[in-house]
View 1 (cartoon, one colour):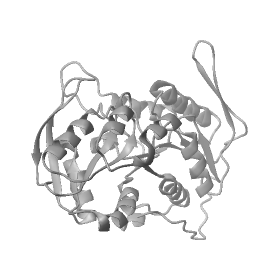
View 2: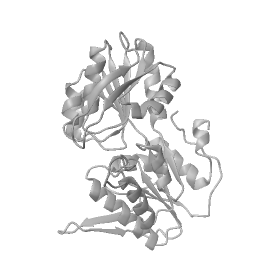
View 3: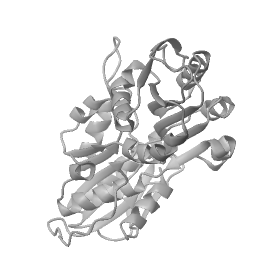
Length: 332
């Protein structure tokens, strides 16, 4: 469901007024969130010295205020991550009443476990750094794995953008032929099942074996029926699009008709955009958790549809500020 602005008349005063800050990771999304809340983004300077060190400076005081720091930790990952951490500490040292890190896309979310010897659990490290930097709460969307929530000791709202995506998809289904949700791999099967149930369509899955970092994956088997059907191919994010490429060709070989690619985070590392542009995909449906460059938008052309998560994050910020339930937005 697409959130709608709700004015309750209730005013929370424990943490002062809402104060919005944004890093440089996704300025367009930050502007849309501010517009939803009828707020101005608070002024700040983020300077980069010749040695690539960063300095943050607030234009005015955040003392006692309910502060929301909006920053996607997408490319350039390490600059955006350090911006987030430095801004959080700046706000903490300025005596902000409460600081919420709003992270539409969280970097290193795939590094969520020790699945081989002598490797780190970097998602836990990132969670620790966000807390140590000064965040009292966090918000994020569609983490790669649910256990990442347990890496945080501070409270947070882990949201999903699939409510927004399904709102867009549902009216289009009347023109589809026996639509079927297909997950890119078995790891996304549970959330794929939830999407299929919400859309009231069948579910199929692709079994694959993942190679090492930056190596292609091998699609092995299709579990389910897609012959003569339109397919909603879904995943949480698309990085290099190697898995998507293999999945699309497997689906076409299995007799699928039109393929709609549905995912939340458009990471789109090279050569993802070139791969997606060349694939026989009817439509690419995603969100603005990660900004897509003008050049990449032009390459994808009319295939690309971007559904904004700004109303969702804006409403959750409002409810958090006023101390109201977020779950009731989704009848939970």
